[in-house]
Length: 239
Image (cartoon, rainbow, N blue to C red):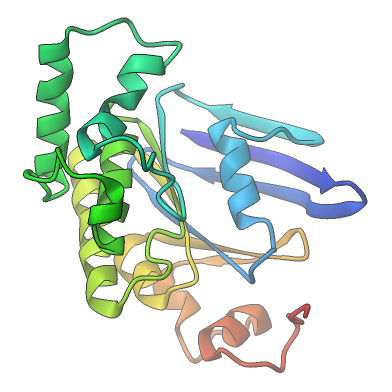
């Protein structure tokens, strides 16, 4: 469903992605991890078609791609209902839909994310976890075959994080999309992903399963440093 080959991305003289290749199969959830600034979100935006790149190839089996942004990226001036309906009204590839059809799809999607009654409210009236779920609703209203999550539990308390992680699992069961989750959170990796890729200094430095990542016997120094939250190791934090 997703194939990334020898991807390179520069911001001026800064090489963020130097030579990155991976794939995500249909129905699989891949966790993309690494230090802040290592290029995880950049790779996600490139796959979504939001950013360009300098070299390499991106192959997607479908153009039906949904993305949930780190800070929800909801329109504060629009109600929850209008935020979710927004793709139907401005999407270049979507045929105009009757208002009744749009409302039905919005209602169905709000129920799916567990927020059936918040349609008339505005994002500022919702908690952080609820805004995340509304962001998910907008991303999945077109039933995407590829789903991209950028730091879905960032800034949430443990209970809200668990709700969001449960929702990712539920949506995966419902949509069976090829999905990528960019995250730092151990619980999100363990509970949502089947496979993990770690980026550092523009390269993939480790790949395996969540169980292998958190196995104390894992000999990979990058995986070990991430698992232990250690300051000492091959990954050096830039400050």
